[in-house]
Length: 237
Ligand code: APR
Image (cartoon, rainbow, N blue to C red; front, side, top):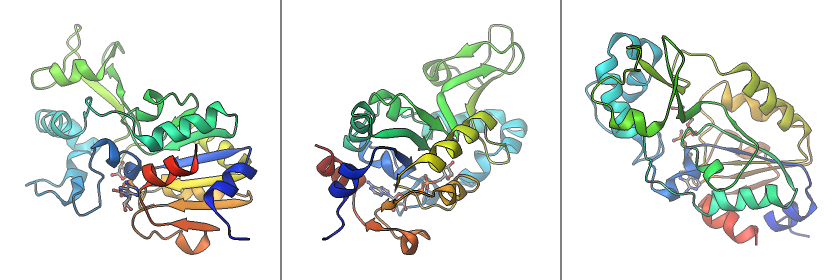
């Protein structure tokens, strides 16, 4: 009998969905490494440098100019991929979402248990007094966003050179270790430690839904090279 995504989902009770930027491209947010990805766009300083902790400290004005221009797509709406994943959780078939994305679209689609490995644009805190601010506060600030106490407001996003949040990592790994099916989608699996977490999976079905090939393709039980919104939307009625 041919192994289909529908069959795998119908048999599974503890799915973990592991996603990357490719899950949000159908919401209009470019990914990083595709032809039209953010890292392919020409800048005098590479985006990967501008999104580093060092650059945030040494060039806050330029950091926030880039960040506000490229990392705050507050207009974006969840697409069929986000909605399908939220539905699986509602049906009691999904343990959690583990995402490398910082756009909050899984929660906007209704997902409850989401491990945001690289943080979220929706959480921002003053570096001096810790006061919380919204992504909208950052977007509308002139230049470097300042707290009422005068401190710089830093997004709770994992910048290059920063560690991931310990509790988030622990929860994500515990989830993947318990899963009976791991669906990896919309990620090139090139950034560690996130990419390495999929190796913790010990369950029955390892599924990959990605437009391009990835290093994981050979190890999967099912590989679908396609658009994750379309594929998941069709498989999750
Ligand atoms: N459907 C399926 N796959 C898609 C779609 C789509 N609609 N759109 C893009 N893809 C695939 C691309 O083929 C690519 O392999 O998604 C992948 C996106 O890869 P990246 O752009 O490298 O994004 P990601 O893997 O999430 O990057 C990881 O890098 O810069 C850091 O912190 C950043 O979290 C990010 C991390």
